[in-house]
Image 1 (tube, rainbow, N blue to C red):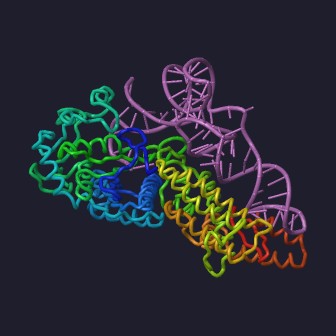
Image 2: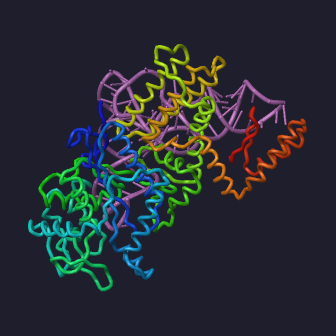
Image 3: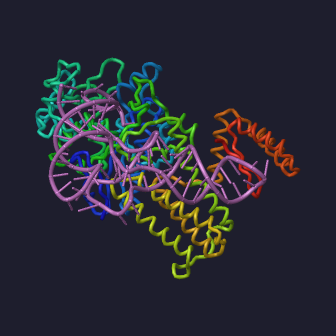
Length: 492
RNA sequence: GGCGGCAUAGCCAAGUGGCUAAGGCAGCGGUCUGCAAAACCGUUAUUCACCGGUUCGAAUCCGGUUGCCGCCUCCA
């Protein structure tokens, strides 16, 4: 069994067979650089990051192209409002985007082309569409004629007549059919422009992605992805342009991620319920955010809230507690190597379960990137490890240390595909503690002073004072952990 | 109005024809502890919105009902 996933075009799960053996070309629509990224952008980025990481894990050589739209009405508006040019606006938000994505642990794509670097390609493609009779020029604007492309609607599952019937759009007088879309817009005064055979103007949004994907991946390539909202009209229009121009199939598989919602409603500017990514990463560790996203299937809608993030944080702690426990048992690093034949009893059992974990992980991921199931296997494995280490018969021998170091390597190896469990556990808990303390305006030094005082009181068996301090801290959501090596703390 | 999706325990969430309905959070019991907490272990759905049908057998397929959501306009 190999990789299979849901293809939007055929509306079902299909086996993935790349155009060229062991290689994958994938194009994902990136952001329009006019504002700060929100958690919805984060979901799309994390989903396709996970997908490309998994493809690599499965031995594919991945060419991942993700564009930046750096010329667009919204960018122009913003530039005008701020009295600057579109270049400055797009540069600013691309830089912000890259910083945010780095922090989220999203690997940079192989290529990140920008629309403004590909204007000549767009002009050539529009020219070809006009030559082929699929596009027409009106007063410096160029439109694509949807009626002249027979497959129009095949991705989104609609037909032109149905859409016409329900259309609530302002019909542009210049269009022959209300569904026609713009390929080239003549520029108005004060707008950026490029010379073209139809006069000064700028490209429409859809043509960008057709040109950039095909330039870097070929006229026919493997996978095209994006948020589910892009299915119509954006991706539908890309198909019409690309297949219309070259008479060849465009993307062979289409992948779309589901949306982030807030209180079961779409997160959108008009509803004013946008959570921006930076704020979210200040509130929670970036891995918590990734975990939250990957806990559900990539196509399901997921509800974003502080409570659900807190739940995800609790789940992540379970992993890091176990990694911390292993770390403490392996002070000298990974140690001596053994083979399966050298092991017996619980050691052998856990070692074998470590091997089985990868199989279960691959089985889940091969089935439409089922990260929820994959994480389930990882959680079960965590319980196996905790049982192993808690067992009365457990001794930190060279063999058990080997078993644990192998288990840890495996968790990290599979975690890497998801972009999780990649930091040192002490660092993770330290960062979490500082972040949570800061959120509540707590003074770390004061807390540690009180803990020191309580430890002293406890040594003197002054339980009254010790409990007084403990109760005071619990009030402030500070949870104490009394262990053999002293007291540590965290925020509830 | 047109097209499409979803409904599984207190909450989140896998599972889409047949081994005991994954997993997480919360709750409860236990271990530990000066008592606690934290952590760990154990435990929690005869049942999958409702009604009917197909089948030896359905949460899973078909028809209908109800509820929620998305797209059709910029959108990850």
